[in-house]
Amino acid sequence: MQSFATTLVLYISVIAALLQNVIAAVSSQAPSNATAEQLENQKRSFSIGYVVFPGWEPLDVFGPLEILFEMSFYYKMTLAVIAKEVGPVATVPPPHNIGGPSGPHMDVGFLLGPTITATHTFENAPALDILIVPGGEGVVALEEANDTSAEDFVASRVGELDYLLSVCTGAAILAKSGVLNGKRATTNKGAWAQVTSFGTNISWVPSARWVVDGNVWTSSGVAAGLDMTYAFMKYLYGTEDLDPVMNSIEYAPHTNPHWDPFSVVHNVPGADKNMSLIDCVGPVGYS
Ligand SMILES: *[C@@H]1O[C@H](CO)[C@@H](O)[C@H](O)[C@H]1NC(C)=O
Ligand SMILES: *[C@@H]1O[C@H](CO)[C@@H](O)[C@H](O)[C@H]1NC(C)=O
Ligand SMILES: *[C@@H]1O[C@H](CO)[C@@H](O)[C@H](O)[C@H]1NC(C)=O
Ligand SMILES: *[C@@H]1O[C@H](CO)[C@@H](O)[C@H](O)[C@H]1NC(C)=O
Image (cartoon, rainbow, N blue to C red; front, side):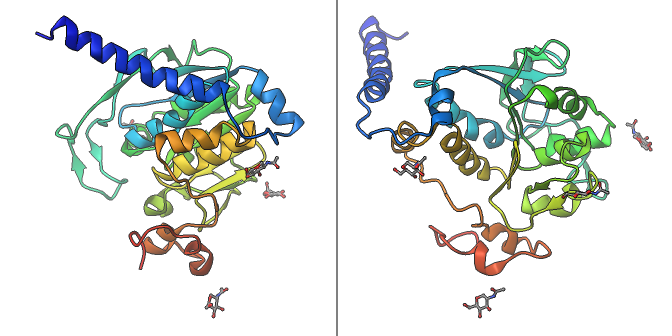
């Protein structure tokens, strides 16, 4: 059993960490160079929705959420985690053909399966300003099961949104919903052929860490969601509080949307080797 003293020390350190963020918030040194629109955004509240389904990719959800969580120290946001049913939704997809119809049929119940708690269903989700759609192997399982609930939800809500974002193969859900028709978009470079088979008249950008077309933001695979979220937060609020958050979480985002060594690694047709390899910060992931 934890002693009272240990518990107290634990509480104090948690509170100290929180206070540090708050102090940083009120004593932000950098003079604001925010635009009028960013200043407006800093004053309003954003209702954020996150679609989840069995087999969501952990970092697709918690990468962006890490940045949003930290930014919610500074600006008003609310979060709804939206799925078919309320309650826990695991990262483990149901048995299906892994990677697509030609993949091996597998029960991947042996995978690590942390859950996120869905707070709302597709039917009772609150009004939303921002909707984020992650990817993951679960997208393949939804497709195999002819389960259109996620894309139907996106299609039904796109009209009310200020911004729609997808991470990784979440772009397949956007494509199937029809919202990408006539737009530029990108997705996970390792799942390129499959995801780009969905939708009509979509200009899939082969080399891009993320793509913005109007109010629709799509990122490349998994960790690219962090970089897109940095760019999105910068667009929304400016950098005065965002950059201290990056220092606080010790993350150096890729800020050039053309940086995409993974489009080269995965031999995406039309990949731009020159642009993809600029601004690389590490020796891994490309050759
Ligand atoms: C504000 O300054 C940061 C660098 O500190 C820059 O990245 C950003 O583009 C500037 N924003 C505007 C609106 O000029
Ligand atoms: C999904 O739809 C396809 C094509 O209509 C059909 O062949 C398949 O049996 C359906 N799968 C399920 C699980 O309903
Ligand atoms: C396809 O999208 C482009 C915009 O990228 C638009 O100009 C064009 O009309 C669209 N074509 C069709 C057939 O919808
Ligand atoms: C890529 O860079 C190389 C070396 O700088 C250059 O020779 C080549 O023309 C570039 N290719 C494109 C498509 O820009």
